[in-house]
Each structure stands twice: as C-alpha cells, then as structure tokens.
Amino acid sequence: MGNKKTHKFENLVLEYKRVMQGQVDLEKLTCYAVTYHSTAIEGSTLTEGQVYNLLDLDIPAKNKPFSEQQMVIDHQKALVFMLNKAKERTAITEPLIKEIGALVVKNTGSVYNTVLGTFDSTKGDYRLLNVFAGAQRFPDNSKVPALMRTLVSEINEKIGTAKTFSQKCELAFEIHYRFVSIHPFADGNGRTSRLLMNYILTMFVLPIFYVFKSNRISYIQALERARTKDNPTIFYNFMYRQYQKFFEKELRNGVKG
Image 1 (cartoon, rainbow, N blue to C red):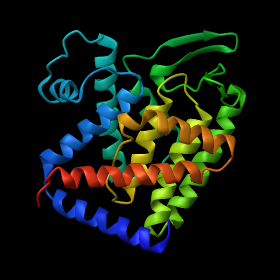
Image 2: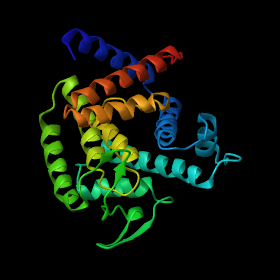
Image 3: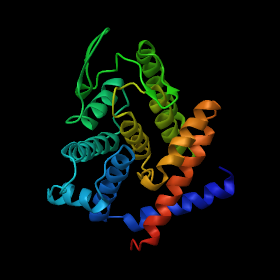
Image 4: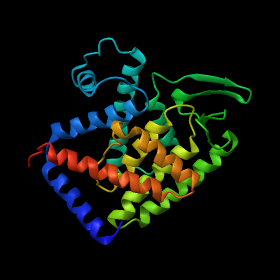
C-alpha cells in the first residue's frame, strides 16, 4: 500500500480499537462473526443468528445438519484456543499448527487409510494423500513436512523483523496464503489458514477480522490468480480490501466508544 493509503488505513484501525476498548460483549460478537463467516465459506448453511444462538445460548439450529453445527462449535473452540496462545505470544511451531488444525475438525474429521499408511485429521496429522480443489493441484503429500518446516522457520524470522503496519498485515496475509497453498491437512485447511492469519494479527495487537461470506468467490479467485501468476501481492491486495471492509462495516454499524 502507498503511504497515504497506509496512513488512512492505520487511522481506521486506531478508531476501531478506540471504540472497542473494554467492550467485552462486542469482542465476543466479533469472534462469533469470525466463526460464522469462516464456516459459511466452507459450506455451513447456518445463518449468522443461528451461529450466535448456538454459541452463546447453546440453542441448536433447527433443520440444519448436525455436522454443520459441529463445524461451527469446533471452529469457535479453535478460535478461542488460538487467541489465548497468540495473546501469550506463543511461538508458531508445527505442533501448535497441528493442534489448531485438530481442533478445527475435532468432530467432523476422519481417520484415513491410504496406501502410504493411516492418518487421523482429528489429531492434526499431515495428509498422506494428494488433494485437489477444482483444477488446482496442491503439493505432493511427500513434500508437505519440508514445506511446513520452511514456512514455520521463515514466518518466525519475519515476526521478529516486521515493524511497520504494512509489514505486520502482509505477514498475516502471507501465512494465510502459504499455508492454504501447501494444504497440509486432509480437511480444514481454509479455516486453519484464516485462524493463523488472525494469530499473527493478534501477536501484533491488531484486530482480528474475517473474509466476508458474500465475497467467497472473489476470495477463491484471488487465491487462484495469485498462485497462477506466482504473485502473492494479488491476494494481499484482496485481503487489505476485506480488512478495510470489516472496519468500515463495524464502525458504520454504530459501535460506540
């Protein structure tokens, strides 16, 4: 982002943080919204109100698949776990990522039997099979461990050197982009990638946010274009717009200080 845009964006963030100061209920509602949008992107049909009722009042959504409700509950637990670890500035490690990934699919994951062996997605095991998303082929499963080691090492190095607002945001977008491009798990990669993005933001004391359900197609297209052109900036620019949209929506909705 250019200096003018960055300055304007930072002011938006500061205003949001100011009005959110001490607003515990609003922070809780933001977490519920993160879970709603992230699970909706992955196919949950629960409405935002149904998600709030399920998480806040323990009221199941009528006529909605049990698996989708489990997905919502699992995501919220993974989000709370992630936030607590990030606020403690716990270093990002492979075991931590596996723990987050396991929580995301705790009640919806499976044990997989493959020619290469058995693995359990509910335990955060890396996949022992190859995966596709449309025409997109993700790295061969044999490459996943080395790719994840490199990702963790490079992200941790950058956490220590990210100083500016843009560097911090783009590092959050980078772990999102690189993790989902590796696709280390059999399931839950999208949800986990967005949690890791918010992990970085939380470590830098920046507000968490979500990719809007209504922008799901644009989001997928931005990921695909960035991968096809080998240009992550395409994705980062999309995510900046989503982050700005989040702040503008929250402030427009009358969050009062």
